[in-house]
Length: 284
Ligand code: PLP
Image 1 (spheres, rainbow, N blue to C red):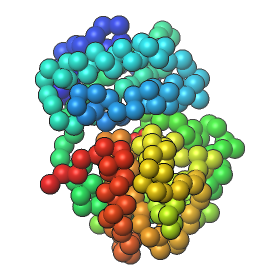
Image 2: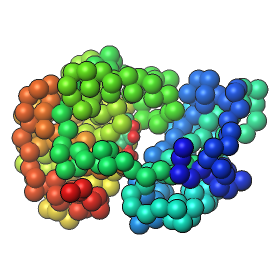
Image 3: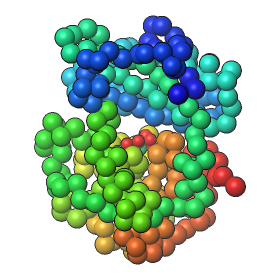
């Protein structure tokens, strides 16, 4: 059960109480959008950026989210209850579905949960990853908007499937690879790597989700003396990178230790800088 549940225009509700109707399109078709946001010191980190991305995801799926102020108020109602009930790191999830099958407004709610320790251990221990084909070329999703590249839709079943598959390969997580051999992103994370003094990430033209964490890291990177660039990288080159990371709001910055069983170099000094820039605490 979520520690906190809040519903748009209703405020905080009992997390055990029924919330969705059986014909909600979010359930029937994964037809909706969501965000997962890091909560620290009782506040949502990069909330405005997440709300903008969520509105953009909904627009791309041709339904309107409530106004940004209303979404922010929902988040604040949930966070207020969270501050009364818990401290430490949390995950605020905002969900908006298209609503019920026969029409009506979107279904919009928020939950806040503590972040389990195992989810943040990769900040300390790193991640072994297994590459998995996405089945389309890096430029395919830009030309086919119905593939929903760059949209954080609720339909994450294939993201969960590839994560389970990666575990059967002895890895901790997967990395999507385009049919033409480019490393794109993790199923729930963005890819970053180091080339000399340049912090690199995948361009959004490759249909990846624009990560709020990776964007923030690239924006802040000059403070650590790093240049930044968005570019494509082949899996072969990624395996030879000076260092590589997966980043996301809840997981933070996790360095990659192996790709398909091959050891990847690491730069603990840069990892520490990235944690510091984005304010991620590394567990003991
Ligand atoms: N890419 C995908 C497909 C994701 O699902 C996520 C987050 O869940 C990310 C990247 C990282 O995004 P953020 O840093 O905004 O959490």
